Length: 182
Image (tube, rainbow, N blue to C red; front, side, top):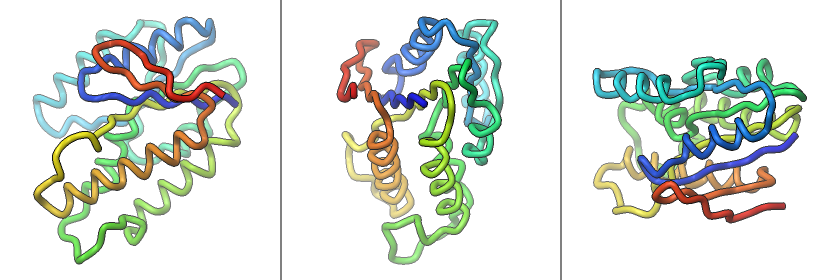
């Protein structure tokens, strides 16, 4: 299995870079999309991604059970794109109404189960898997506890995925910068 992580800011060109990598592979491509259309703006963003994607890419929508979807879709002759880990994390934390004094989402059972399942599953998958994620730790400290928890967990998740990945790329202004290529 080859695992790759593409990081970058909003509208940095991450998805387009992931799609180019998949096209260049010559393999059959499946996109696991994690976004949910909670409002019209998000629905429009989803439609834009769908329209921009090559027509022959197969798309599976999986807002939460990512490890299960990867086990079903990964194959030796397939290139799987997960777009995106950050929205998946949003979905996992969406049911958190209030937090006590914690900066650790591992105390949240659904989050812990799905995150652990993903990290255990990735190294066992056949084929090529590319995960897209936002790098959100470069901005301001969020004002609210849930925002800080989200930022912290996104950073922890990105670090864990990067450690499992053979290649990590940071995309800014559509330009890829290779951080790791082992």
